[in-house]
Image (cartoon, rainbow, N blue to C red; front, side, top):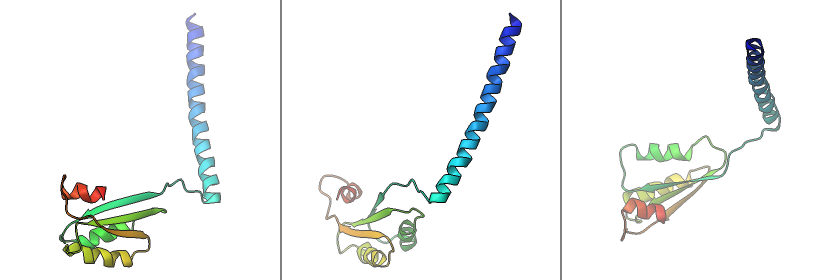
Length: 121
């Protein structure tokens, strides 16, 4: 009886090892096929960036968002008002952007923090 269980255990271990190799082979095959057809599984995305004032490194931070290594995304830059020091900088960065970039004026917050109000706008 012990021999039967030992044999079944060995067979199950061999089947597990074979399954691992099949998985590796499948992964290689799928990568090769995707590379042949240049298929990308990225979904469209939108990044909402609430801004207020000009912090140190402001331009570099916004520029890094506008230069993401992602094939299909857009950016919405939100400011409280046109009087905010960040607004004119945001417009300039949006004009120079290679991707779909929108600048929105949210207006002053009344029932929540300005950051949440900007995100909701």
